Length: 316
Image 1: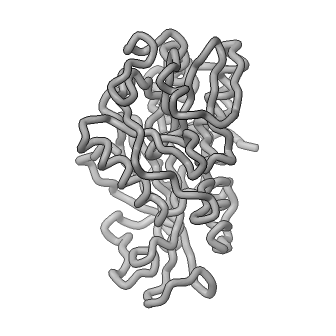
Image 2 (image 1 turned 90 degrees about the horizontal axis):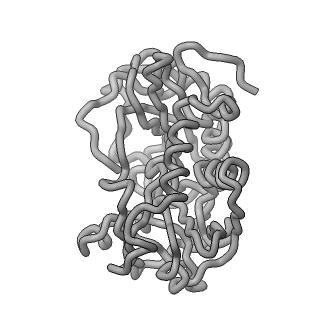
């Protein structure tokens, strides 16, 4: 993720909004020592014309966060709407008037030695920072196939954003970038394409858009669901969810990553092989334009996905 020099002024911590410097945990903290936690990632988009900050699909993101906590057997006394209300209170205190990234974290409060998930006290913290691009070139991402396999769902729940699982992503990303690539594609235990280091994968072949199914050890991405709907209902393309072989990717006409962090990033080469023309193609170009119009609240049909921070409306 791109670094930011701007630190938050506030965080939600232990049930209230506090100065960011007060949101701290001990070096004995269970999550710090064992990775026993889960996190989410939301984006907020500043609409200059409306002077409004729109948070994209917050209820969906917080529902997934709570589901990730459930996979770890944590029971939290929050609803997605309550977490959205807390987020808005936090953002109004911050007063951001630019694009931001929001990080909620479910963590264990206990300070003790011993690996387990039961009989622990969990809580949620949250902060937000200004944020731009996740990958250096969203219109021309170079990719390699990783030698690391994606964590299997019977090892660590793949559909949850579990903190400890992201060492897998870190190994994948570091090896790819040290080899001179921007990103990597990862195979699952069956040898099929799973996803990127931290993004879902799509490719275009013979006028069909193909993406791995949720049973191939992928994160059940909210951006992925958004993209599937936009491709089908706004661009008139057939989207097929099925296993993908490695060599199919080399023959793709277009390909891209999607996710809250990466947004829509065109893949223009894989293992030094050009994808299509080796440049961003017409489908991904149109999809990117449509996506950014949607997340900034400029498409009336999808305004229900956009939660305004400074002029809030009732949300179902």
